[in-house]
Image 1: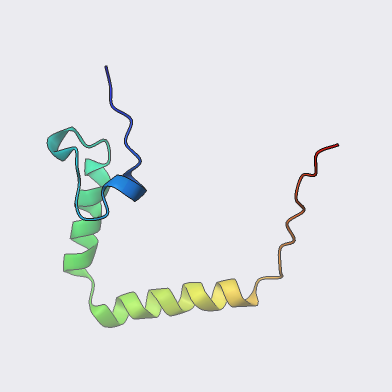
Image 2: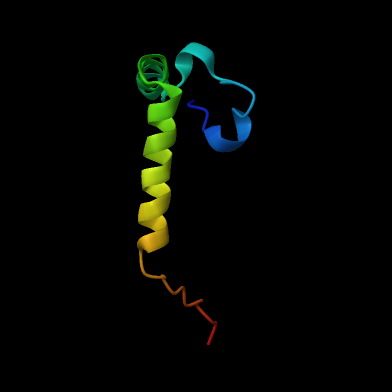
Amino acid sequence: MENKVDCAVACVNGCVLGDECPNKEYAAATSDFISSTSLDKMLEIAEAARMKKMSAPPQWVYPDFPE
């Protein structure tokens, strides 16, 4: 039986599945990115993403009302 774990909630302080984690490939890619990218470059990427989001038109969300 396979355990379903919500990683966003359960793994806040570290992975709870260890070697059985389905997201191990992403962890390795993230570790490589962090070790090979300077903090200034990361801040530049974050600022570009923030400016893109700020310049996008607003998106309206219409709630579904029960009939």
